[in-house]
Each structure stands twice: as structure tokens, then as C-alpha cells.
Image 1: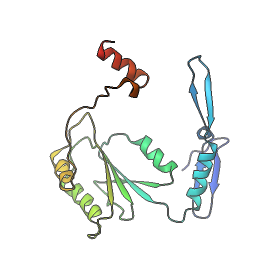
Image 2: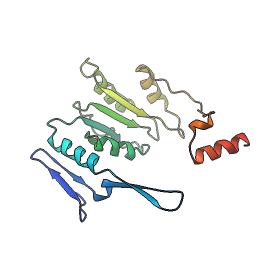
Image 3: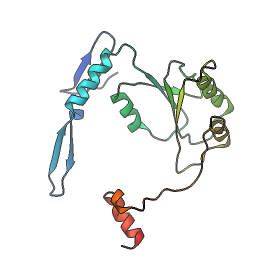
Length: 186
């Protein structure tokens, strides 16, 4: 079920394979003069692929889905390029794989059910060994529901409200600097 294109590179061993897209080998940025600056990512991409296919036990990560979650595709892409095996699990209908090194919970559009929280607790408890991890992505648009909020509080995570504002223009870049200058009346 892979989408192969002309010039794609397949790196394969008897354990697994990875497809390296030609487009991932180079990056470019536009310059102020309207040109482009190109840079090679070939070494990083090929090294990552070789390490992935030769690693006997790549770390597994579970991405929880089925919750109309916040989009974390960029984060998943980063994990895969760093040789994590990312599996998707529907928290409503499936159990969390106990072999996962950590679980990613992108902010759900609605509160979790008690049954879904129980699955998370079972995974984190890990037969009282507690050597599992949960990464929770909050949303600026939606509040955390009471069931999820209580679950997070039980594990020492408190969700507050507020905003962060950079007051040093030397730490702000590009359009953000323009917005900062506008807001400050400069």
C-alpha cells in the first residue's frame, strides 16, 4: 500500500524497509532577492533510513486517534524520521500496545470517557512499574474536559490558562516582529 514515485529510493533489509522520497533529499528557502538557497538533506535522510532498517528493536510510539484530535502530523513525521515506529490506535475501540515507549494524546475535540481514561491509566501504571510516558498536546482553542482534566491532575499535570508574550524584540523574528512592532505602536 505504498505510494512510489519515479526516483524514490528504497532502503531495505530482511527486517523492514523505508522509502526515501527524492523531495526529502533537498530543501530550499527563498531569498530576499527572489532567488532560492538550496541545501542537501541527503546524508541525514539516508543515514536515518539505514539506521531504521538495521535497528533490531525500534522504539514504538502510539498515537491516539478517533477523538477528532488536533493535527500533529508534523510531530509524527519528525518521530518517523528519527526512527520511531509510530502506530495509530483508536482509544475508543482499541487497547494501547503495552510495548509502546510512549503515547501521544493530541487534544481531543471533546472530553474523554471514563473507559478511555482507564485505558490510559492501565498503560501508564504498567503493572505498577510506571516506566511509561504520555505526551499530551493541549489546544488553545478548546478547554480540557473535566474527565481528562482530572486524569491529568492525578498524574501531576495542571492545565491553566494564560498567554505568553515576548517583550524583547531581539528574540522575535519576521512577521512576528512586525506584529510586535505594530502592537507596541513602533
